[in-house]
Image 1 (cartoon, rainbow, N blue to C red):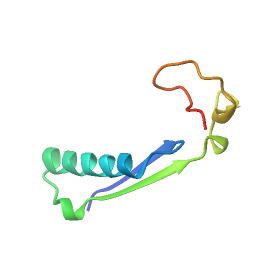
Image 2 (cartoon, rainbow, N blue to C red; image 1 turned 180 degrees about the vertical axis):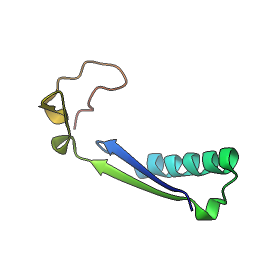
Image 3 (cartoon, rainbow, N blue to C red; image 1 turned 30 degrees about the vertical axis):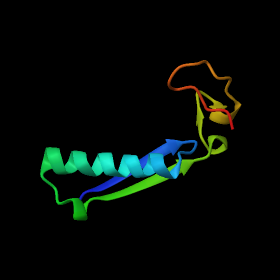
Length: 73
């Protein structure tokens, strides 16, 4: 039984999470021949106040623009 754990900094909408679950499941079916009913996916949303990098909380970083900038909340 494949078990996939995804951690996200910040949050995602229910629709975005449903899409992730569908995409990950489809990939395991297509690439590894797994039964989709056996694929388990857990999404953990980590608050930007509970995640730091380079000695700074992500919530305290100034957005630099680009794909990895912390979203404003």
